[in-house]
Image 1 (spheres, rainbow, N blue to C red):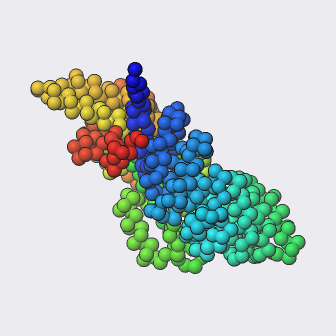
Image 2 (image 1 turned 90 degrees about the vertical axis):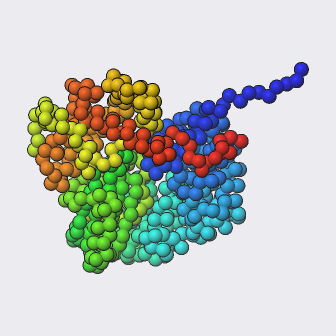
Image 3 (image 1 turned 45 degrees about the vertical axis):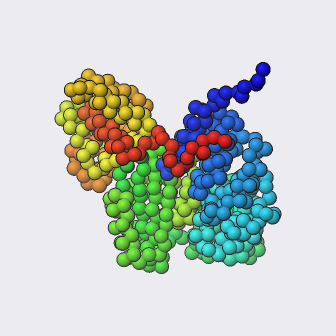
Length: 526
């Protein structure tokens, strides 16, 4: 009897994997998304490898490639290492950042990237090896950022090797980079940087150590003092002025409200000792912390003001006190630490704009002591006018573009098409109740926290007190639940607007549940 081919029943599971890999490439990708995908990949086993490697052959963005490499570590090296070597050597469409990530992945897997054929690629990227480090140092701040991008990808063992290697390099760039590493999140790296500075027989290295003793966080002060003593035995002494923090003045601080996707922007600008203006621009997320950073050095007042006006328009910034902006940044750094979300390399390089104590991770709790929260909670007027909040500029874009919202939007469209006399109030109530259960309830604490932060932003920027109270009422009633969500004017309007947004997006061809057409059918399976 003829043997029939075994039927492949894995199509639905592999289809789900491909959809998950698509989310891996979104700009608003979070640590929670990564954990979810990693669990799914682990459960799927080796079936996940072919589509994963297929995407790795095509993506060009360095951070996205790093996410795929993270998933590869779930599997045994033997199942993918040869393919990763081929991808690294064959791809000619990648920029320096993407090539560096691939080389770092090979390095973590035990491949000697300083030997042929990989040394050719290492030379192209100016990588963090004995042959490429000098070139990075010579590029100044741009090179420091490239170094930090690479540094995050290396194993902890190789990170310590690189720190020691910096002590062998001539020129002030080595000390400047080691000073940046004194603020790194890994304590072992900070410790090794202090020890390495004690091996550099230059005044500039001793000055960095003295600054750390006086202005560092104190974690390794005794170790820094020991390194200073070692240098003094060798007749190497710091510049006495290094221990005094230079007096610099803030020019502007600005913060945006929190958008529908949880992001907000922060602006810091300060006069430097040379009479120019330095700028630090941050993007933060309500659950991940600092997600992006950019710096601009030694700007003229005119160039600074032009850049600020552009940022105000693009990021919807409002000027605030520097203390408030620092509190928001410190809260974001706390989230980076708590959630394990990596701090952008640009922040490490440009945090020099900030002074001692201004970048310490501290959770932020808004102060509403000037408001009677109990009275606000029981105010019928504030509660019933809660739906008008979504007309305010600070609530622009408050629409969750999740697959479940789009599912409910499809159901709404189907009901409207099938009912002769339009959508009945009963069916609409059923749909909205489902929205409350599936979209609001699981995220109520996160939404309430966002509302409290927006209320705080409104009071800090001098907005009308009644608007602040309306926002506080929405947050308090969301947590209190004395009134069912279905009868909550703010939540009902939020649900209706979200479904309307989803329907409009579907009409324009956008659907987050669908795989982007660029993937093509051949992307799915072998």
